[in-house]
Length: 235
Image (cartoon, rainbow, N blue to C red; front, side, top):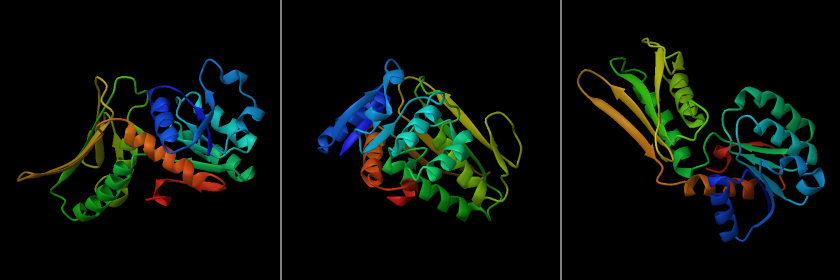
């Protein structure tokens, strides 16, 4: 499979390593220094694109892929306010889009555990719940897309929580504590606390390899397909 790699930072390099091990070819590297020089003809050399850039550039990158008829796996977060317009363009162009707030297989299993636990805890009102996440200092979006997904799952399944917030307090508010330190790949902890005991579930990434592998698996799945997909389609 021929891959266009859009974004060539630490994550992009990890994706490249895994893709090459799985016998794929990287036919195009798109970085901030050459992005203006990449043409539709260049993009058409690939079977699929994998996009890991920044919230400020992702929408333009996705648009260019759709216009070129190139299916794209997007790993950038912090852009979902624009999802409706990208979804419309994808359907209009009969393109392929694979999106996720986190590509780690482990995290997506963690999502399922989080949803199930929230369903169980719904009738035990003596337990309050909050989320704590820890990420490296270079991460731009706060909270992370992963934390927002976890929070949304809890709110959908726990009647006593109506919204999430980084700052607001209240019985109906799910608080997210956001920590940025060092080079931490990503840690997420769900804490249910009562007067008598605490229940916690946690996912801690040891490195970026899990995220990169998931993105390559998504690209393998998306090749030759039209439509909009997420990690639930492959897990």
